[in-house]
Image (cartoon, rainbow, N blue to C red; front, side):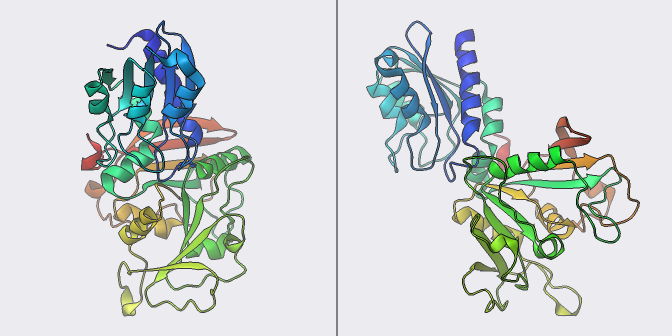
Length: 372
Protein backbone atom coordinates (compact mmCIF):
# COMPACT_ATOMS: atom_id res chain seq x y z
CA UNK A 1 0.00 0.00 0.00
CA UNK A 2 1.18 3.50 -0.81
CA UNK A 3 2.45 5.58 2.09
CA UNK A 4 1.35 9.12 2.94
CA UNK A 5 4.67 10.36 1.56
CA UNK A 6 4.04 8.56 -1.72
CA UNK A 7 0.51 9.92 -1.92
CA UNK A 8 1.79 13.47 -1.46
CA UNK A 9 4.42 12.85 -4.14
CA UNK A 10 1.81 11.51 -6.56
CA UNK A 11 -0.35 14.56 -5.94
CA UNK A 12 2.65 16.67 -6.92
CA UNK A 13 3.15 14.52 -10.04
CA UNK A 14 -0.49 15.09 -11.05
CA UNK A 15 0.00 18.85 -10.69
CA UNK A 16 3.18 18.69 -12.77
CA UNK A 17 1.42 16.79 -15.55
CA UNK A 18 -1.09 19.62 -15.99
CA UNK A 19 1.67 22.08 -16.90
CA UNK A 20 1.89 20.64 -20.40
CA UNK A 21 -1.80 20.66 -21.35
CA UNK A 22 -2.03 21.71 -24.99
CA UNK A 23 1.66 21.04 -25.68
CA UNK A 24 2.11 17.26 -25.97
CA UNK A 25 -0.35 16.01 -28.60
CA UNK A 26 -0.54 13.33 -29.78
CA UNK A 27 1.15 12.18 -26.58
CA UNK A 28 -0.33 12.20 -23.06
CA UNK A 29 0.50 14.64 -20.28
CA UNK A 30 2.52 12.88 -17.60
CA UNK A 31 4.18 13.93 -14.34
CA UNK A 32 6.80 12.08 -12.31
CA UNK A 33 8.38 12.52 -8.87
CA UNK A 34 11.38 10.55 -7.57
CA UNK A 35 11.87 9.75 -3.87
CA UNK A 36 15.23 8.48 -2.67
CA UNK A 37 15.60 5.38 -0.48
CA UNK A 38 14.75 7.45 2.61
CA UNK A 39 11.59 8.89 1.05
CA UNK A 40 13.05 12.33 0.37
CA UNK A 41 11.92 14.03 -2.84
CA UNK A 42 15.03 14.28 -5.06
CA UNK A 43 13.71 14.77 -8.60
CA UNK A 44 10.63 15.68 -10.55
CA UNK A 45 9.64 16.32 -14.15
CA UNK A 46 6.85 16.28 -16.69
CA UNK A 47 6.50 15.49 -20.37
CA UNK A 48 6.84 18.92 -21.93
CA UNK A 49 6.64 18.44 -25.70
CA UNK A 50 5.83 15.64 -28.11
CA UNK A 51 9.10 14.08 -29.23
CA UNK A 52 10.94 15.34 -26.16
CA UNK A 53 12.03 13.41 -23.05
CA UNK A 54 9.26 11.79 -21.07
CA UNK A 55 8.44 12.76 -17.49
CA UNK A 56 10.44 9.88 -16.00
CA UNK A 57 13.58 10.89 -17.89
CA UNK A 58 13.36 14.49 -16.67
CA UNK A 59 12.82 13.32 -13.08
CA UNK A 60 15.63 10.74 -13.18
CA UNK A 61 18.04 13.33 -14.58
CA UNK A 62 17.16 15.69 -11.73
CA UNK A 63 17.58 12.93 -9.13
CA UNK A 64 20.88 11.57 -10.44
CA UNK A 65 22.46 8.83 -8.34
CA UNK A 66 19.99 9.48 -5.52
CA UNK A 67 17.36 7.67 -7.60
CA UNK A 68 19.09 4.32 -6.95
CA UNK A 69 17.04 2.29 -4.49
CA UNK A 70 14.30 4.92 -4.57
CA UNK A 71 10.67 5.17 -5.65
CA UNK A 72 9.18 6.71 -8.81
CA UNK A 73 5.65 8.15 -8.65
CA UNK A 74 4.23 8.45 -12.19
CA UNK A 75 0.77 9.56 -13.29
CA UNK A 76 0.69 7.09 -16.21
CA UNK A 77 2.11 3.56 -16.35
CA UNK A 78 5.67 3.87 -17.69
CA UNK A 79 5.78 3.18 -21.42
CA UNK A 80 7.25 -0.02 -22.78
CA UNK A 81 8.03 0.88 -26.37
CA UNK A 82 10.60 2.77 -28.39
CA UNK A 83 9.23 5.67 -30.41
CA UNK A 84 10.88 9.04 -30.76
CA UNK A 85 12.23 8.33 -27.27
CA UNK A 86 13.22 5.12 -25.50
CA UNK A 87 11.03 3.06 -23.16
CA UNK A 88 10.63 4.66 -19.74
CA UNK A 89 10.30 1.29 -18.02
CA UNK A 90 13.83 0.43 -19.09
CA UNK A 91 15.14 3.86 -18.03
CA UNK A 92 13.73 3.31 -14.53
CA UNK A 93 15.33 -0.13 -14.32
CA UNK A 94 18.72 1.17 -15.44
CA UNK A 95 18.54 3.99 -12.88
CA UNK A 96 18.17 1.42 -10.10
CA UNK A 97 14.65 2.40 -9.05
CA UNK A 98 13.38 -0.13 -6.50
CA UNK A 99 9.66 0.76 -6.53
CA UNK A 100 7.29 2.31 -9.07
CA UNK A 101 3.83 3.61 -8.21
CA UNK A 102 1.63 4.75 -11.10
CA UNK A 103 -1.85 6.27 -11.15
CA UNK A 104 -3.39 5.14 -14.47
CA UNK A 105 -2.70 2.01 -16.49
CA UNK A 106 -1.70 2.79 -20.06
CA UNK A 107 -4.64 1.84 -22.35
CA UNK A 108 -2.55 2.20 -25.50
CA UNK A 109 -1.69 -1.35 -26.71
CA UNK A 110 1.48 -0.14 -28.45
CA UNK A 111 2.93 1.35 -25.25
CA UNK A 112 1.44 -0.70 -22.41
CA UNK A 113 3.24 -3.47 -20.56
CA UNK A 114 5.64 -1.26 -18.66
CA UNK A 115 4.44 -2.56 -15.29
CA UNK A 116 5.06 -6.16 -16.33
CA UNK A 117 8.55 -5.29 -17.58
CA UNK A 118 9.36 -3.58 -14.30
CA UNK A 119 8.09 -6.51 -12.24
CA UNK A 120 10.11 -8.95 -14.34
CA UNK A 121 13.21 -6.92 -13.49
CA UNK A 122 12.49 -7.23 -9.75
CA UNK A 123 10.96 -3.75 -9.28
CA UNK A 124 8.08 -3.45 -6.80
CA UNK A 125 5.12 -2.03 -8.73
CA UNK A 126 1.79 -0.64 -7.54
CA UNK A 127 -0.95 0.92 -9.69
CA UNK A 128 -4.06 3.02 -9.09
CA UNK A 129 -2.81 5.65 -6.64
CA UNK A 130 -4.86 8.86 -7.17
CA UNK A 131 -6.23 7.39 -10.36
CA UNK A 132 -9.25 9.69 -10.59
CA UNK A 133 -7.16 12.84 -10.16
CA UNK A 134 -4.63 11.74 -12.77
CA UNK A 135 -7.34 10.71 -15.23
CA UNK A 136 -9.04 14.09 -14.91
CA UNK A 137 -5.89 15.91 -16.03
CA UNK A 138 -5.16 13.44 -18.83
CA UNK A 139 -8.77 12.93 -19.92
CA UNK A 140 -8.24 14.25 -23.46
CA UNK A 141 -5.55 11.73 -24.33
CA UNK A 142 -7.34 8.89 -22.55
CA UNK A 143 -10.55 9.66 -24.44
CA UNK A 144 -8.68 9.68 -27.74
CA UNK A 145 -7.23 6.22 -27.04
CA UNK A 146 -10.47 4.73 -25.76
CA UNK A 147 -12.84 6.22 -28.34
CA UNK A 148 -10.53 6.84 -31.30
CA UNK A 149 -11.52 10.50 -31.52
CA UNK A 150 -10.54 13.76 -29.79
CA UNK A 151 -12.03 14.78 -26.49
CA UNK A 152 -14.54 17.62 -27.02
CA UNK A 153 -15.28 20.46 -24.62
CA UNK A 154 -18.18 22.67 -25.70
CA UNK A 155 -17.78 26.19 -24.37
CA UNK A 156 -20.31 28.99 -24.62
CA UNK A 157 -21.14 32.30 -22.96
CA UNK A 158 -24.77 33.21 -22.32
CA UNK A 159 -27.08 35.43 -20.33
CA UNK A 160 -29.02 34.09 -17.37
CA UNK A 161 -31.94 33.47 -19.72
CA UNK A 162 -29.76 31.41 -22.07
CA UNK A 163 -29.21 33.94 -24.86
CA UNK A 164 -25.85 34.09 -26.65
CA UNK A 165 -26.69 37.32 -28.49
CA UNK A 166 -29.33 40.03 -28.56
CA UNK A 167 -32.17 40.10 -31.08
CA UNK A 168 -30.12 42.37 -33.35
CA UNK A 169 -27.22 39.90 -33.31
CA UNK A 170 -24.88 41.85 -31.02
CA UNK A 171 -22.98 39.64 -28.59
CA UNK A 172 -19.89 41.60 -27.46
CA UNK A 173 -19.51 41.40 -24.63
CA UNK A 174 -22.01 39.18 -22.80
CA UNK A 175 -19.37 37.69 -20.53
CA UNK A 176 -16.85 39.56 -18.40
CA UNK A 177 -13.14 40.14 -18.99
CA UNK A 178 -12.42 37.47 -16.37
CA UNK A 179 -14.45 34.91 -18.29
CA UNK A 180 -12.84 35.84 -21.58
CA UNK A 181 -9.39 35.43 -20.05
CA UNK A 182 -10.42 32.00 -18.83
CA UNK A 183 -11.46 31.05 -22.37
CA UNK A 184 -7.92 31.80 -23.52
CA UNK A 185 -6.71 29.37 -20.87
CA UNK A 186 -9.03 26.71 -22.31
CA UNK A 187 -7.71 27.45 -25.80
CA UNK A 188 -4.13 27.14 -24.57
CA UNK A 189 -4.95 23.72 -23.10
CA UNK A 190 -6.56 22.51 -26.34
CA UNK A 191 -5.09 21.14 -29.55
CA UNK A 192 -7.82 22.62 -31.76
CA UNK A 193 -10.52 25.29 -31.55
CA UNK A 194 -13.58 24.67 -33.73
CA UNK A 195 -16.19 27.16 -34.95
CA UNK A 196 -18.83 27.13 -37.65
CA UNK A 197 -19.19 29.39 -40.65
CA UNK A 198 -22.09 31.26 -39.00
CA UNK A 199 -19.89 32.30 -36.10
CA UNK A 200 -17.14 33.23 -38.53
CA UNK A 201 -19.43 35.51 -40.54
CA UNK A 202 -21.10 37.07 -37.50
CA UNK A 203 -18.06 37.68 -35.28
CA UNK A 204 -14.94 37.21 -37.46
CA UNK A 205 -13.17 35.61 -34.46
CA UNK A 206 -9.39 35.31 -34.30
CA UNK A 207 -9.37 32.12 -32.17
CA UNK A 208 -5.66 32.29 -31.29
CA UNK A 209 -4.52 32.34 -27.66
CA UNK A 210 -3.73 35.79 -26.31
CA UNK A 211 -2.32 36.91 -22.97
CA UNK A 212 -0.49 33.66 -22.17
CA UNK A 213 3.21 33.36 -22.91
CA UNK A 214 4.92 30.32 -24.40
CA UNK A 215 1.82 28.42 -25.50
CA UNK A 216 1.49 26.08 -28.43
CA UNK A 217 -1.20 27.74 -30.52
CA UNK A 218 -4.13 25.41 -31.22
CA UNK A 219 -5.23 24.51 -34.72
CA UNK A 220 -8.06 26.86 -35.72
CA UNK A 221 -10.80 24.88 -37.47
CA UNK A 222 -13.71 26.40 -39.37
CA UNK A 223 -16.59 24.09 -40.31
CA UNK A 224 -17.65 25.79 -43.53
CA UNK A 225 -19.87 23.46 -45.53
CA UNK A 226 -20.19 25.71 -48.58
CA UNK A 227 -16.71 27.29 -48.40
CA UNK A 228 -17.93 30.83 -47.78
CA UNK A 229 -14.85 31.86 -45.80
CA UNK A 230 -13.20 34.90 -47.35
CA UNK A 231 -9.46 35.44 -47.64
CA UNK A 232 -9.58 38.44 -45.30
CA UNK A 233 -11.00 36.42 -42.37
CA UNK A 234 -8.93 36.91 -39.22
CA UNK A 235 -8.47 33.15 -38.77
CA UNK A 236 -6.39 33.09 -41.94
CA UNK A 237 -3.55 35.16 -40.52
CA UNK A 238 -0.26 33.60 -39.45
CA UNK A 239 -0.87 33.74 -35.69
CA UNK A 240 -1.81 30.04 -35.62
CA UNK A 241 -2.45 27.23 -38.13
CA UNK A 242 -5.92 27.06 -39.66
CA UNK A 243 -7.95 24.31 -41.30
CA UNK A 244 -11.15 24.91 -43.28
CA UNK A 245 -13.47 21.90 -43.43
CA UNK A 246 -15.81 22.01 -46.44
CA UNK A 247 -18.26 19.76 -48.25
CA UNK A 248 -16.99 17.34 -50.85
CA UNK A 249 -18.17 19.42 -53.81
CA UNK A 250 -17.63 22.92 -52.38
CA UNK A 251 -15.87 25.48 -54.56
CA UNK A 252 -12.61 26.48 -52.89
CA UNK A 253 -10.94 28.25 -55.80
CA UNK A 254 -10.94 31.50 -53.81
CA UNK A 255 -8.86 29.84 -51.04
CA UNK A 256 -5.78 28.70 -53.00
CA UNK A 257 -3.26 28.88 -50.14
CA UNK A 258 -5.49 27.61 -47.34
CA UNK A 259 -5.37 24.16 -45.75
CA UNK A 260 -8.75 22.70 -46.79
CA UNK A 261 -10.21 19.28 -46.06
CA UNK A 262 -13.27 17.91 -47.85
CA UNK A 263 -15.67 15.90 -45.70
CA UNK A 264 -18.95 14.05 -46.26
CA UNK A 265 -22.21 15.87 -45.66
CA UNK A 266 -24.27 15.10 -42.58
CA UNK A 267 -27.77 15.47 -43.99
CA UNK A 268 -29.90 16.93 -46.73
CA UNK A 269 -32.46 19.58 -45.81
CA UNK A 270 -35.57 20.75 -47.60
CA UNK A 271 -35.01 21.36 -51.28
CA UNK A 272 -31.92 19.17 -51.26
CA UNK A 273 -29.72 21.74 -49.50
CA UNK A 274 -26.73 20.31 -47.68
CA UNK A 275 -27.14 21.27 -44.04
CA UNK A 276 -23.76 20.50 -42.54
CA UNK A 277 -20.75 18.24 -42.37
CA UNK A 278 -20.52 14.86 -40.72
CA UNK A 279 -19.23 15.43 -37.17
CA UNK A 280 -17.77 11.92 -36.88
CA UNK A 281 -15.79 12.42 -40.08
CA UNK A 282 -14.55 15.80 -38.86
CA UNK A 283 -13.32 14.35 -35.58
CA UNK A 284 -11.68 11.44 -37.39
CA UNK A 285 -9.82 13.90 -39.61
CA UNK A 286 -8.64 15.90 -36.60
CA UNK A 287 -7.60 12.74 -34.75
CA UNK A 288 -5.56 11.71 -37.77
CA UNK A 289 -3.79 15.06 -37.60
CA UNK A 290 -2.73 14.41 -34.00
CA UNK A 291 -5.47 16.46 -32.33
CA UNK A 292 -6.43 14.97 -28.99
CA UNK A 293 -8.50 17.78 -27.46
CA UNK A 294 -11.04 20.07 -29.12
CA UNK A 295 -12.54 23.27 -27.76
CA UNK A 296 -15.87 23.71 -29.53
CA UNK A 297 -16.65 27.43 -29.70
CA UNK A 298 -19.12 27.27 -32.55
CA UNK A 299 -22.63 28.67 -32.48
CA UNK A 300 -25.89 26.88 -31.68
CA UNK A 301 -26.15 25.00 -34.99
CA UNK A 302 -22.72 23.42 -34.75
CA UNK A 303 -23.17 22.73 -31.05
CA UNK A 304 -26.44 20.96 -31.82
CA UNK A 305 -24.72 18.80 -34.42
CA UNK A 306 -22.04 17.75 -31.92
CA UNK A 307 -24.61 16.96 -29.23
CA UNK A 308 -26.69 14.98 -31.72
CA UNK A 309 -23.58 13.00 -32.67
CA UNK A 310 -22.86 12.15 -29.03
CA UNK A 311 -19.56 13.98 -29.34
CA UNK A 312 -19.62 16.37 -26.38
CA UNK A 313 -17.59 15.17 -23.39
CA UNK A 314 -17.71 18.30 -21.24
CA UNK A 315 -19.76 21.50 -21.26
CA UNK A 316 -18.32 24.75 -19.90
CA UNK A 317 -20.88 27.55 -19.65
CA UNK A 318 -20.06 31.13 -18.72
CA UNK A 319 -23.29 32.62 -17.38
CA UNK A 320 -23.47 36.40 -17.12
CA UNK A 321 -25.94 38.21 -14.82
CA UNK A 322 -27.75 39.69 -17.82
CA UNK A 323 -31.28 39.28 -19.20
CA UNK A 324 -32.21 39.82 -22.85
CA UNK A 325 -35.56 38.12 -23.36
CA UNK A 326 -34.89 37.63 -27.08
CA UNK A 327 -32.10 36.46 -29.33
CA UNK A 328 -30.55 33.09 -30.21
CA UNK A 329 -30.12 30.38 -27.62
CA UNK A 330 -26.85 28.53 -26.98
CA UNK A 331 -28.08 25.23 -28.46
CA UNK A 332 -30.06 24.64 -31.64
CA UNK A 333 -31.60 21.40 -32.87
CA UNK A 334 -29.72 18.49 -31.29
CA UNK A 335 -32.10 15.75 -32.37
CA UNK A 336 -33.92 15.85 -29.02
CA UNK A 337 -37.70 15.98 -29.33
CA UNK A 338 -38.88 14.89 -25.88
CA UNK A 339 -37.73 15.32 -22.30
CA UNK A 340 -36.99 11.61 -22.09
CA UNK A 341 -34.26 12.10 -24.70
CA UNK A 342 -32.61 15.01 -22.89
CA UNK A 343 -28.87 14.86 -22.39
CA UNK A 344 -28.61 14.87 -18.62
CA UNK A 345 -25.48 16.41 -17.13
CA UNK A 346 -23.64 16.12 -13.84
CA UNK A 347 -22.20 19.43 -12.64
CA UNK A 348 -18.55 18.93 -11.70
CA UNK A 349 -17.55 22.50 -10.88
CA UNK A 350 -19.03 25.95 -10.29
CA UNK A 351 -16.73 28.98 -10.02
CA UNK A 352 -17.17 32.74 -9.79
CA UNK A 353 -15.27 34.69 -12.45
CA UNK A 354 -15.80 38.40 -11.84
CA UNK A 355 -19.57 38.90 -12.08
CA UNK A 356 -20.07 35.64 -14.03
CA UNK A 357 -20.52 32.01 -13.08
CA UNK A 358 -18.55 29.29 -14.82
CA UNK A 359 -20.41 25.99 -14.73
CA UNK A 360 -18.69 22.79 -15.84
CA UNK A 361 -20.68 19.61 -16.43
CA UNK A 362 -20.28 16.20 -18.04
CA UNK A 363 -22.83 13.76 -19.47
CA UNK A 364 -24.46 11.85 -16.62
CA UNK A 365 -24.18 8.61 -18.58
CA UNK A 366 -20.58 8.16 -19.76
CA UNK A 367 -19.54 6.58 -23.04
CA UNK A 368 -19.40 2.79 -22.54
CA UNK A 369 -15.66 2.69 -23.30
CA UNK A 370 -14.96 5.31 -20.65
CA UNK A 371 -16.32 3.23 -17.78
CA UNK A 372 -13.15 1.18 -17.32
